[in-house]
Image 1 (cartoon, rainbow, N blue to C red):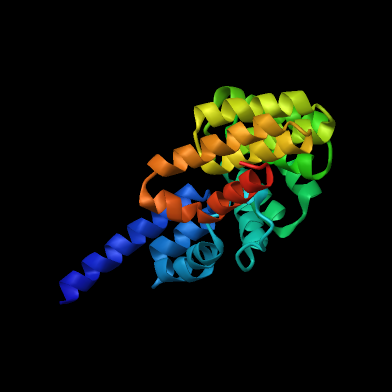
Image 2: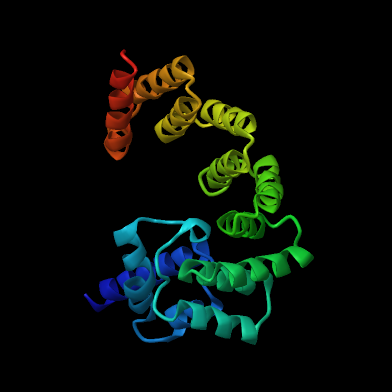
Length: 244
């Protein structure tokens, strides 16, 4: 029994280490998981579980509060070892805490030595967007879309389209969303495209986008349909309003 429990703890620790790596957690968390008694459980309770309960959000777009002391923990790790990895973790923690200006500065520092780092480009672009610096946001986000279009579930692509929209270039925004829908046929993408068409009184184009969304839904797996049930109802409602 003790042997089985030891195997379980080892597997659980490996799982938490992988999760920490995926989230770009601070180096301090690796030490806690590896060397602190029940460190893996501590990481699970303070980092993974709270974020699972609220949805697996991405730091650059998240408005949720970070894990307790996450800013302090990542800053301590950065002070100990000023690597790009640690600075990105610190920037993401600052951004999640709402300190957008400071987060942008840290992302820009990473870009000085790693100009093509997709996480730094996306993070800096998201911060610039939040600060309504649309020109710079477009430059950074476009770099991500060009080289890493599927990064973070196409999040940079969607934000780039929104930046063009807010900047007043509605044609480019719709063109980007239309291309995104063809590259990644996901129901939410079609609905965003449809709503943009509606905002410009392009009812026929909106209707076609909504019909594409529902057509994709019909052939999607049941779990995908359940996941996007709200989007599906939204598409059906909009179609009724358009007089389908």
